[in-house]
Image 1 (cartoon, rainbow, N blue to C red):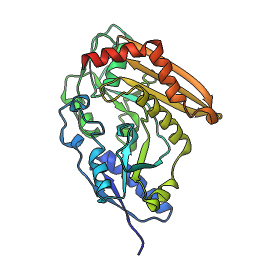
Image 2 (image 1 turned 180 degrees about the vertical axis):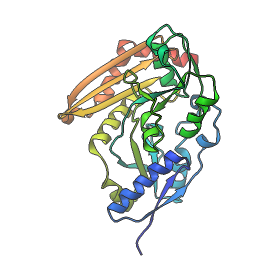
Image 3 (image 1 turned 135 degrees about the vertical axis):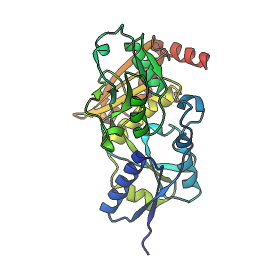
Image 4 (image 1 turned 45 degrees about the vertical axis):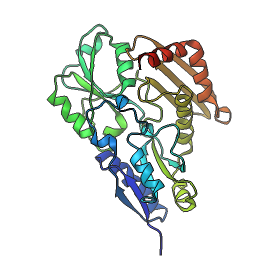
Length: 306
């Protein structure tokens, strides 16, 4: 009897969309699969900012446990939620072709305040990375916490006295809820692996691993690995405003990264380029360069505050 691969997923609309995409990709290559719904701590605590919960992989740990306990065969995650050090016994089975990596701003009304760096406004986001980059550009703005799934966060914009909120473009676009008024924040560098979907399976499950390798995107896998190397080298977590983006163009890998102080006042950036063949350590090299050029001082300041 043919094995039916059990795909573990959270029950949010976006998570189900991602898991269904993987199910369909498996079907295209002749593998039967079904969805298994797992509740995560990140879904049940909607008030505590992510960086105060103190648990790496808050949205992935429940699925990791289910994999280790053989309750599911495959887990599907937004890759930026996955800790750089995966749970023991689990391996990356595939990284899907990346969607847009950009952050977007969803305004409530008038956008005139964005034309003035000295303007005052209240903006919502739960991401300390987005807060720091926003404050770097708009130092007089107030940043409020915003939690919940995508639809909940969109609704909260109307329910609160904010000028708007910041989202990952990919999440809005995947489930078809990007408002027409949303604008791309081309100046905001994304979280490492933002816009990418990762499929994880148990180490040693050769059948599941081979099934998923059919839809692994080599360029996305390379770029997200470099971005996560950069994050790991800086020992960054949810409480550290670290951003990174690697892109493949014409056989070259272009890497950009930065770190900011939590209040956005200090910022150190790095940019590097190499051929694909010589890019293996690009993320680590970029992290070392950033640390030596002022990043270490910012990191020490953040750790001193925590």
